[in-house]
Image 1 (tube, helix red, strand yellow):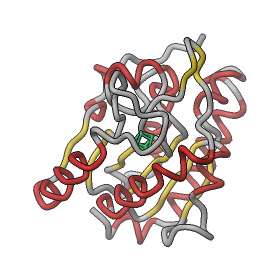
Image 2: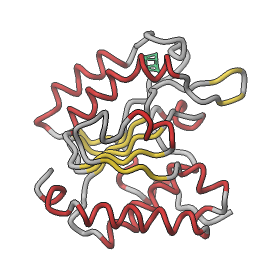
Image 3: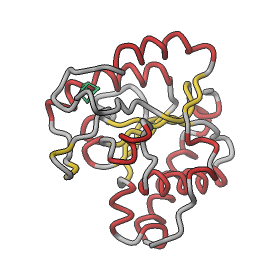
Image 4: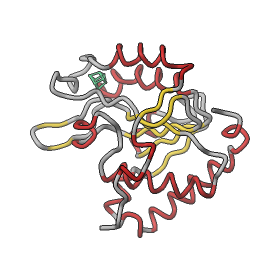
Length: 206
Ligand code: SF4
């Protein structure tokens, strides 16, 4: 297994909400923190809403929280999240105009059955989609990056008004060798190229 830095090495592991959207974020949390709109929402589970900065230049949207995320109440804080952070920090070096990002998932509650983590199903994603839309409106990104096929099926140029690009999900990169793999390198190159293509839009956003 590759060396993956622990989260304390990253300042961005938490959520920073800028003053101008504090009220909107308060109401967003009020609406979704105790949501029971779909069967994934149980009293025992966290509503894993977001981490990063709001507003932000770039939004990453994955699929669903896992075990670590459910415990910490923050998305992408397990091994996949650590790989994503390494990727982000590397791309930032190549794209110094990019400073802020926020992260969420298609669903805010961990899908599971017993100890098995399952993929969220269409009804769950559909019930949670107003939350994702609200979140994107709050973040006001220049671009949207989807992680994995499911996220790219739901958020793409046909469904959202922002430029978007699909990347491999970090868990898929971990399965084929992590940081040493060709998949990691190609994902790094794809994200760098996409950000550079939208440099003016990103630079003019918070
Ligand atoms: S996954 Fe989304 S829609 Fe379903 S209960 Fe959780 S917050 Fe509500």
